[in-house]
Length: 274
Length: 274
Image 1 (cartoon, rainbow over the protein chains, first blue to last red):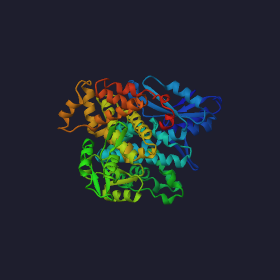
Image 2: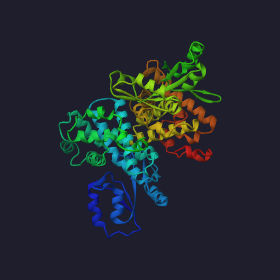
Image 3: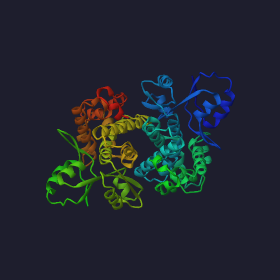
Image 4: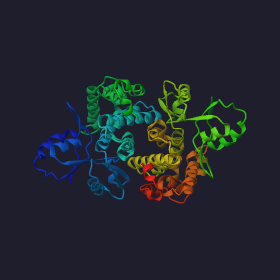
């Protein structure tokens, strides 16, 4: 059993090194948030692992900030699996402790996209905090963000289930990340500075060399939205990236997210966008 | 057009005074959170208004703490309507402003139960805050609470829709209330005092005569759960009430909510409980 946990940028290189050194009956699980955007579309990290190494790969995501788990505070997580529920059950047993509750759902892409996209919403929540807009606005932005997470995931993968967004990987991880995460914190500082200091500069100052997943994920999501002509369907996702690259002021996160997505741009999208 | 907004305990008396004084074609909307528990089961306030006065009644709920709306911070709300979408559209127009975004959904009971039950979850979130359990645990408790809100609503009214819980009245109002609401604040103080001072005492001290909706709603929900034999299906709801009446310590909110609900107690409930 192989557990992958590393920043997602390194995964393609790591896989290349492992090719030919792993048996086909090995089971893998990825705790990695992010995706690779290629010409033909986005590729989730679990798919990258499966394709490159020829092995099955589950994912583990959830509302679990590491230092709180380390002191044994009650937390939950979600395993996403593709077909084999027995393998999912093995991962559940492996990770479960009396204070760490793991649930399995048959929806790899849904679970993985939750873990990935929540970082973009956390940037939006951080902008709202920096602008001191209050709890109503923050909750509204988080809700609009969750709606875009769900719609984006369903448009990319028709197998994604609505119920996944009620799991720990969905609404709970979104709450944790938008309350206490690093993306939120740096985005708050960005908005407080009026969007004049870059994320690169703020990250260097606040994170001791670490980079925010949210900023690169926002860019990757934007590339997908541009390529597919979906920018008007996802005002929050699109606006987060445009704020990050100084094309819009932080206050645009509220003004633009209020806009109703323009379903008419995409035949049949209204049914998915709900 | 009649707008009802008052603590729910007063509604039966107000309706009695209005009987015979209102024309049948009047349209009503209720902003009231709560329910009347009668021998035959719970009665939502919108139903009470409809039945007593013989008029149609919509509801308006959402993530909107009053003083933030008063200073024109961006907020959202949800109108729940029964059949007539034109009436819903009128209410949407009446309440909408550039900074107050109102959406209509055809699910009166779902919307109204969201507004009512979120106050019980806010007490649970407050206990977690008082015990200083951190963001992972708080997010987990909020998620379990949202799951119980959804399951309880669906068990009571088969017409309730899953999508309603993604609206402002659902996940967004839950977030706002669990971050900033009064129920959360007094419950935090209750847990900090080790559950030794009563809610009556803390309310008198902290709220200048106002009473928390959450405490009475928790009791009402508990009555429904007891009467229908559902206590084991809703560990969080049941535990909140038992903490409020000193039968359990505040820490039970985490220990008990971890329990997997016992579906086997109720035929066919597993399908609803998802």
